[in-house]
Length: 380
View 1: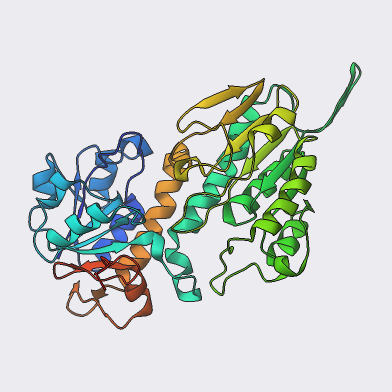
View 2: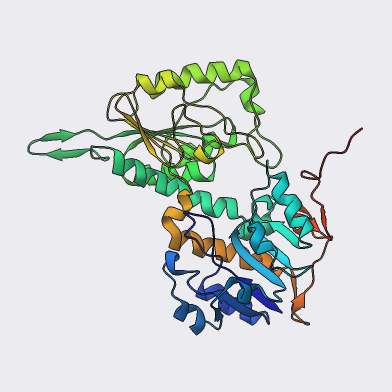
């Protein structure tokens, strides 16, 4: 069984789908692993390290992918790369399926069996495979570091002979994995931290990290979480009440970090132009949802915008800004998933289509899109 790991082709994607540690584990499952030359350099892994772990280095993408039974990637493959896959190959990556129907059709037409890591179900057995959590955790950390870098003052309170430097006030909007890590990081840096979220369960989590919870806690708020643990979209009435509370709170903050995402939908707008204008010059906002339309009005994808002296940070691929760490976690997510796809006795791919993890993540199979959320809509 051949497992191929090509280099990423997306501009600004430094991550890689394997580490020397996961190469050894894949070899332990009986796989021959072939990696494209230079695939790990941007993540701090040299070809020689992959070779020492047992991988073969191939100079061209065609050589990497030739007769591969399984392809591991960070992002969805390009059309040109799909042409190099053999029929029936298992292709596993962060596929970004929402709103990309044409790309999913290409995957189906290529005859590959494609799996989307970001569709991993929120069940105990799949926690080690949860790529959204592993990458969001690092994004939350990096958001605070990026904010501190743009903020022209110290974060913790400092008492000096020359006077006292006040602690920065940091407000985290969205207390999912990224938000909770942002809270923890901001607290470690000595900031005064507050946070908000529409999910009732988040209140206790926020408070456990030493931050103050800010939200309109009415009846709708108490029922604002899906069975899978995701935030529901709130009514216009609730959004208006929450926006008023948040607008008043934002005025007093030095740093705001927004993390709100709803799967399959554009990011909700949390910070309006008026709210940005209400903040003190020198304040910083970091929008972690900028790739999905952004939580902040005025945010620019891939740039730091200056709006009336307030900096709005819109970096793309924030986990990739910690490429070595994010690649390490992602590679372990991938290995845990690959492990359930391989028969340990025959050392070959053996997909159990009754497995709920397989069913939840499979996008294409036998030339068709098989995931119910992404199948083409037929005429009535």
